[in-house]
Each structure stands twice: as structure tokens, then as C-alpha cells.
Length: 78
Ligand SMILES: [Zn+2]
Image (cartoon, rainbow, N blue to C red):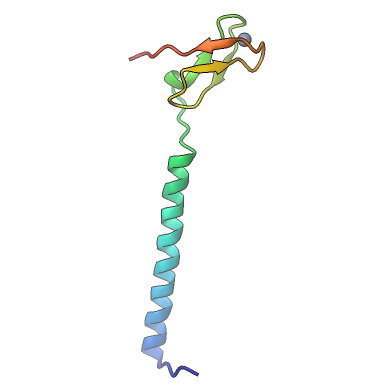
């Protein structure tokens, strides 16, 4: 058995919590990057055929309308 006094045990306890919080924070940053959805007009595609508006992922240039299955080309607006 490892002999551990109170101050060493407390320091170990704080260190383990620090590692856990660092891991959770890194995971949250990673998830924010992966699931990056921002509601803005640049990410909304409006179908030319049925005028149905739907969201697209950032960086996509072609999408298929989920209502009428028409191909929609996304025009860049700057
Ligand atoms: Zn459509």
C-alpha cells in the first residue's frame, strides 16, 4: 500500500480534477468545432423550384432540396 499523507493526497486530488477538467474543456472545444452551426443568411439555401428554405453546412456549394429533391447551387454572397 502506498503511504500518503493529507497534503500529498489533497495535491493528488486537485491534480486529478485538473486533468479531468482539462479533458472536458478540450472535448467541448473539439465538439464546438465539429458541430459548427451558425444561423446566418449565408448558410440558408432557398430552393429555386419550390422556394423552400433549408439549412446547409458551411462550405457546401451544392445541396439537394429536402422537399422537392431539386439540386440547388449555393451562390456566395459577400
Ligand atoms: Zn425544392
